[in-house]
Length: 319
Image (cartoon, rainbow, N blue to C red):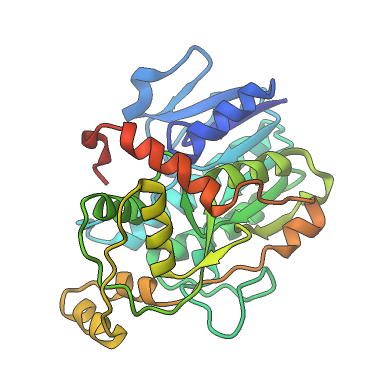
């Protein structure tokens, strides 16, 4: 088997490439221009992820594609039309790759989507694959449309869509990394009065699900929600990270309505809502159909994440 991995230098991509190689599976890495200086002989450097990308050489002779590359959340986005940019890269780019893969005779195409396709919060019960998609932000909309574009292209090529929640592990970026930085610096966090329940996914558990999806017969044409066994509250997560980092959890009680008000006046209502709200995932389908089980607990996943944080130069933490 030869597997093309897009976004191969990223958080998930770098780990899955390593694991595939360790298992004796041939890997072709698709890298962006910023990582082109680190390309190996068999790698492909892709200048543009949008609809004009030329994937023909990247997919030649490939059995399966793991498509991880995407435009993710952009802090302080200055793009004139963010949704159009998300669509150009995440929707049109996925469609262009899928069309090239199909033309090259690729057998299976695995697409890393997001739980944001389902929505931003749960109330009465966890999200499942039977729920109607209800994305609320530009990123979630683009992932939903990318899933639809992928299925519209398919003619003989098997597809598998995975929707994870918030990911963590060595190399994590974004809000999780910012939270780790705040805990390491001893910054008091006004999150002690939050009572919610959120699903997470350790990157090693996600990689297991991706590799299982590469050749499991039951996975063809399916969409799976993937999450760790353990859900946790926002203050519970702070405490768990603090333990892994050998730092105190400086949690202050603060009324959630005041947090919402602060978010409204600072333009961060969406971020505050994610901190306060619940987002639970029912991942029983992938467990039942593919036999997937998360091998790593939250504690086991946070330990290497903290170790990575302490051995990584602070200059690499620009998010």
